[in-house]
Length: 279
Ligand code: 9MG
Image 1 (spheres, rainbow, N blue to C red):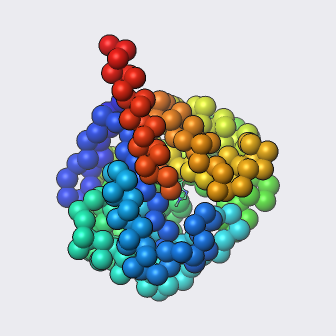
Image 2: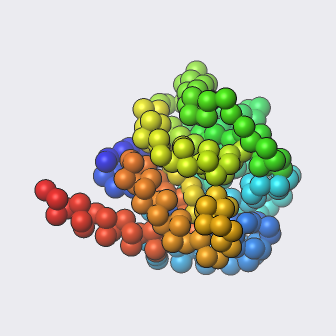
Image 3: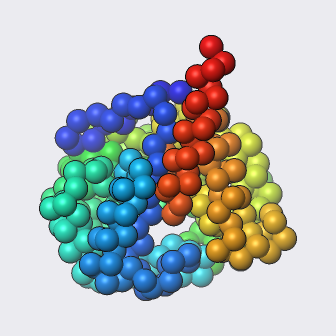
């Protein structure tokens, strides 16, 4: 399935899902501890993901794992900007910044980032306007509540309808602020205010979201996989993450956000080789 996404410097067009490598520049990220708080280590990790076949990197300095608190804007900037600058000196790979803060979006855009990945779907005051000014691509994600409490007792009347109408509303807000429809991708937000049953239902019906734009999916190492497998710890969740990524790819996802770049690329390559022999 092909997809395209406009950003300030052009259009990405692809006939296969892209692999988005996760680079956490946080001391408390949920699956790689604090090992990339050091900017140099974060840059080396990012370059390793490029070597493994990542199509785009997602750089984040605010942990959004369940139970985490927001990071002050100054701290987010202090962590992120040196990493973005260093990466831009060494690679022209597309870069995404995982942030909800308008000032971080503005400064990251000035340093050459291409996509704004906002788990709060540009809801913070000023975020829509800054996103529109930058002309970058945006990812609008669904989340029920905020990371600190979102997994306490998530509940929905009609899950799929609520996720769909939230994302429709955010797309509309983007268009009204001057963001180009062709620059918008959407994400159901696996694990963000959702039980295992909610996540499975959304995954099973992922295809429905394609009417809103290219779909980004992030399931890598998430607790939903651990719960589904009876309590599997984070370092044993890779096969489950690959299964979810392959399912999402077959359902038409455009971008797969993952810690496990090489393995995800391998899975997609084998899928594609098999597909080519169907014709
Ligand atoms: C930052 N982040 C963590 N999980 C994510 C997910 O599933 N999607 C997106 N877009 N961002 C995420």
